[in-house]
Amino acid sequence: MSTRAYQYPMWVSQLAKLLPRGLKDQIRGNLRLHQKLLAITNRTPIRRIALDTLLLGGENGIRANDVARVFDEPLRPSTLAIHSHHVDLLRRYAREGDALLEDAALQATAFYQNIAKCMAFTGHYRGFSRTSDIAAIARHFIEQYLADQAAAQRGRRSTIDDEPVLLMRVQHSSYFQVFDGHHRIARAIMQNATTIRAIILPEVAITPIQDALASVLWVSGRREIYQPIAMPEVQEGWHLVRRCSDRLAHMQTYLKRLNITPPSSYLDLGSNHGWFVDQMLKAGFDARGVERDYFGRQIGVIAYGLDLKRITLSDLENYLDSNPAPTDIVSFFSVIHHTLLAGEEEDAARIIRKIDRITGKVLFFETAHGHENIHPKLAKWNDATIAEFLRANTSFTDITLLGHDRDNVGAFAHAYGRALFACRR
Image (cartoon, rainbow, N blue to C red; front, side, top):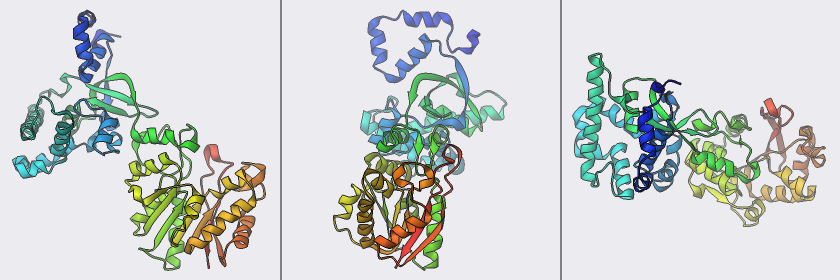
């Protein structure tokens, strides 16, 4: 490859390798300088990377996942750069002009608040240490943006590409996390550019949502998602096993027919990430869940912004034995077959009787079927035998088959297609 494909000529690379040990150690202590030194000494090629594949990274030397945790912004490393607070400031300035730089207006911006958080955590931001300096930082940023605009009007090249930004690949995806260069990226976006010059660092980034998904105990490391998650970095290398929207549509149609409306209470037993809880909350119901997996519950906090208080972390039977108050609407999806696999049918019957007692109006129920060939213990279970199991072990007098899920596609063509029942008295 031609040396033009690299940021630095050979002599710079050789010189960097000859730096005194003390200076090298000092550089290694500064994360940004250390990464730049690696780029020099490894002669990493510069590439043009699409701006719409960039996710927000860390800030002011703080790594992205640390920013997410310290600033309580778990979705930040999953946010596209086109939605950054840097871009927001420039877009607002384009609309509002210098009025945005008035103290009250500027202090209300996400740009200002982010820098203030960085200063509070690290004691500085780009060499500034007082919040009163943030106005100067914003003005300098806007001056660069205005210079870009002026250069474009004169048909001249802007300075955005003078220094490549530093990026890290996000694992199992085609996205990149910004390591250094948020301001330049924002300026490029405002110039309607589609790509930017970048050096791809050797480190691979893992976002909080990816980390939490990989930690879910019962998934055992498989890149499978059992409830929809809209984050961009889990759309390619991860497989959505259950679409869930088909079940929700059946539930909402049934409730509407019975005139069971918000703010009726709703409880999802075995709520997993909390997708149904989130959807029912958005529909106006007083929705809650019960989930035994800590990481499963955390995913709901990250992906849907659920309040932890909405999801009780508990084993199912322990929860049912705690005398919970009755709930108008209860859902119990694809859980009870695990009890059948671990024990006997009477164990499953005991659980469904407990759920019957806490269901006020409607129970939505599904479980695995025999046609899925999961285990010989489940061989007899089909639409008819599941309905009979519900009639024999509950007080429900009306058990209605609402439909079957549509998850039996692709690698799961011989699985799923499970029946969804609505049970009421």
